[in-house]
Length: 339
Image (cartoon, rainbow, N blue to C red):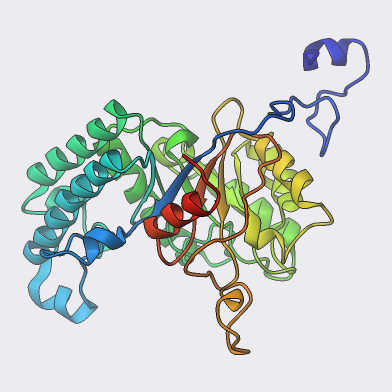
């Protein structure tokens, strides 16, 4: 592959990173089959069904938080962090090098400063142990804050709440000592279109600059599962080309919002935004394949994934978004004889 600089000099490339530019470096590895890393999200089914139960999602309703306050929130957070370390150790023993950390590890975190938690020093220590363990064992840790994080919103208070929530995620990853790169990504959907995608994406890019470096350096965006929302094409043109953050390609979402691209081409465009870091993709299948029920939305995720995940020769880390979590990955590997 000739360098883009050379091609610009030879007037074969404008150098602006145009959509589907034939001169963009591609991550293809010829036609050989790539052994891609596979991970799962948040909950370990084996451990969550054990006694004592291992989980990082301990929380409480708002009334309980109001009644019991920071001491109880601190207790739950410490237990969640200790169990995160247990899950990471299980992952190492069972061949999982990729894990999405729960966004609920710190209950009601937006209601206080983390340093005000009574167990803050111990929490910080355990989180650092988790980060060190992941780093020492070449484990990739990511997170996916909830859909209420909407940087495209025209309402200032919604944006302020989003910035606060994302800042907490960045603070936690810093406490863990994780890299300030998309390798340890904080992934979100960009939010609503509000009847005008162009203006909404412009607001997203403007609000991006209000985020702390702990978030900006890790933030990624993901394509949506509704035709009226954001395709890979939209994100490439309206977000990546403006602020340069990577695009996470979601296979299942792409089926509902193609932007006029084939699966392979959309994947290639998303991969081109990662600038040397192994890209992350999301994979799931429709729950309607497992249950014939007209009430089930075709976008809903299945318990397991059956089809072979075609990466078209690209090296990517695959986050399997299936309800059966690590059991789904293990079953997939059994079906397709993946080591």
